[in-house]
Image (tube, rainbow, N blue to C red; front, side):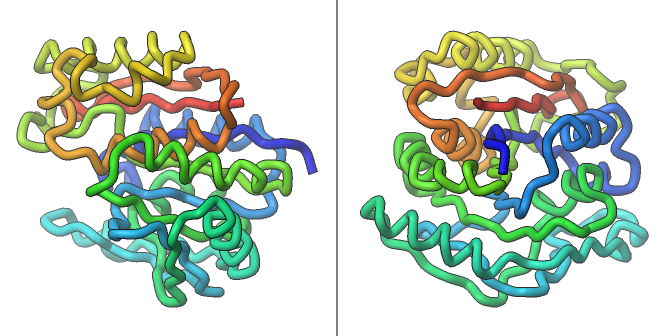
Length: 261
């Protein structure tokens, strides 16, 4: 199997499942540019645990983990097969790296996974499992988790971190035009991340709370940013970043997609 890059995807609002627009087109283009993976593992900002955990269900359900959206969104289903054997392999790699790891045989796919995957692999024929994020742990922990999973990339597995480059729901305008920032900190933080990733400045990235402009407003909590470090770690210590898509939705959600090779 060809060695796949790891990806970080900003998954945006669940409404992208109904009308993904330019972001959905970018997700589709990314998938078409890659060899077909044997399986996909998604480290999602919407599965939060105290210890690393993987889902081992053979038939993951579609989780509608949101409220207040139009009813058609709740009718959508995305039902790819699971990848229990690959998930067990991931758990073994995490354990071998000295990490305590849990296994969840019932966890389905939350919208951090199925919304982008619905555009990337619309036939729902690529096996998928999820990896949990630990919101009480720091970026270095998640970089370590990603490092532990790096071997999967040699086995045809696509490692995706799914979160958001910026994520402050209190400062959004849901009807803002596409690619319009309503607060200056959003493009400033977006550009800082781009600069540090392209420079391979992991020290700065790990210290983003202190070094990045507007970090506290861009991420009042860490969970949507931490999947970036899983994807970065899975590419290894010499990872090179490439931004595959950039954009803004709802006035403040930066929709950048990165590949790490």
